[in-house]
Length: 218
Image 1 (cartoon, rainbow, N blue to C red):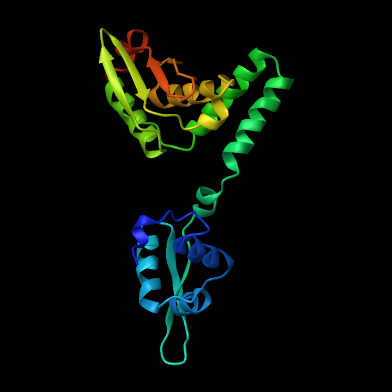
Image 2 (image 1 turned 45 degrees about the vertical axis):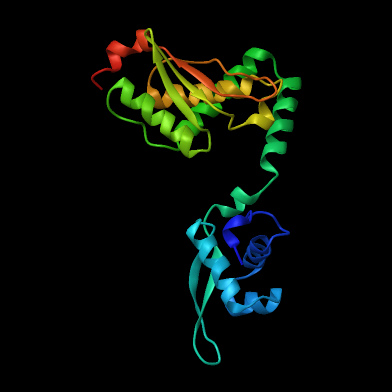
């Protein structure tokens, strides 16, 4: 078996079936093998891969007829990560808000969302350049590959994709939330310059000229 080639969240794969069992209860490797008709060694390979990827963790021991068996549970936060409902929900939520709120209200709302998101992480310290690099690293950690571009006194965080692509189409206000998030973390004015075409890409310009002297020594 080669568990590393399978997508863990796909219910039809062996790893997906194992995760489904672990979501229902706290099974041991022998119990998983018996339920799925697999060999014990095969199940152990999959469990090792899932544990390595941070999807499951050991939850203790269960007494057996001969010796205790390790039991497994999902790692914290994995239920959320495996859900496929978040992006469709966010997309329809944004459309509903857009239908009901005037543009200034929606812009203010998204700014508040960004500030609330920013409160989930510690504020970066150091010079403005270091804070920009820290914000770039956070976006990378959240699943948005990007690079920091510095030229002619202008700094941009330019993404190679979009964290919220499914919600962005025809809803530029979503980008204002990320704009607000980065502004809070960097401590400088941030303006979104995102590409919301067929393949959305994040782009945020940092107002270095207005904040550089104030933030250089912080």
